[in-house]
Amino acid sequence: MIKGTVIINAKICKGCELCILACPQNALGLSSNFNEKGYRYVELIYDACTGCTNCALVCPEAAITVYRQAKPSKKSQIKSE
Image (cartoon, rainbow, N blue to C red; front, side, top):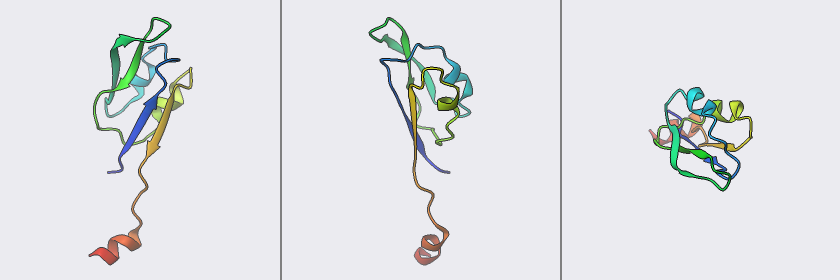
């Protein structure tokens, strides 16, 4: 399975929870902390991210950046066997 991770800009997140609902791995949740604007922001709570980008696509504030590990090439898998 491909691994990914997300970086959430807590300063602009308004805690609308759309990304939490969109995450098929249930890897996101609301923080117990508040940002400068008084909103509880979203954070990565489980290391189960696959880099699917669903969260970033639904974020109305564009507060989420998704990073995905490169998929190993089939050539390198054949050589290592």
